[in-house]
Length: 266
Image 1 (cartoon, one colour):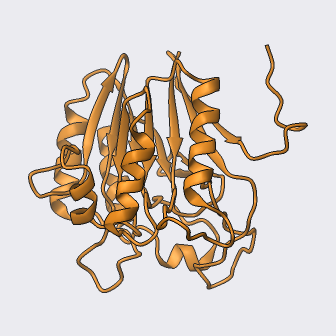
Image 2 (image 1 turned 135 degrees about the horizontal axis):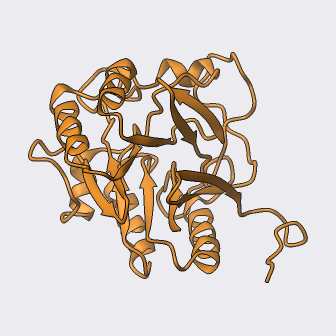
């Protein structure tokens, strides 16, 4: 059994600033310490986009410093709050396509991890997600090259609606194109996303979809609201994927619960 630790929607801000009174860097550091303490045998950490809140160079510098001592390999992805140029300024060696899109592949025994770049940076609506033909064609090739491996696809914008109208309005605009490609390949075992700031399970064309919470602020359970900026100080969380010979097992771990509730067992 292999483990993948997943953080999404970290939203780092400049030093001294907070989001609804929460310090995103402190929350992320707490979550990483919790995950690494309990799962030091994990194969990798995936950061599934919205690494920063404003895409400012100092925010990416804070993330680079926060990851400096991480003992595990880290896959970095972009979300709608990110921008490619300042990201690459802090992470110049980040894997990317020739087009500059931050898409990359990691192969593990029996599995292939494909990280997509759904950032719609050149559009008027930069918070919606989009996958251009170049990114989708790249995905086709990586799916075809997977061999006998099961594939897990990571995309910041989920390829399903969530029931939160405001968030769905800024969802992945061409999700049908993505799902069609994944179904044609026939080897995708799991899709993993963020963006919504809630723990949600769903299905896209018959493929399981797991959406994870942020380590910082969450979307309140306000289905039907048109506002995409609602936030509440619920417990922070990270995801944990268990890759087995039979398929993918998905866990979500709230790490900011009081000590009396967040027990460690031996």
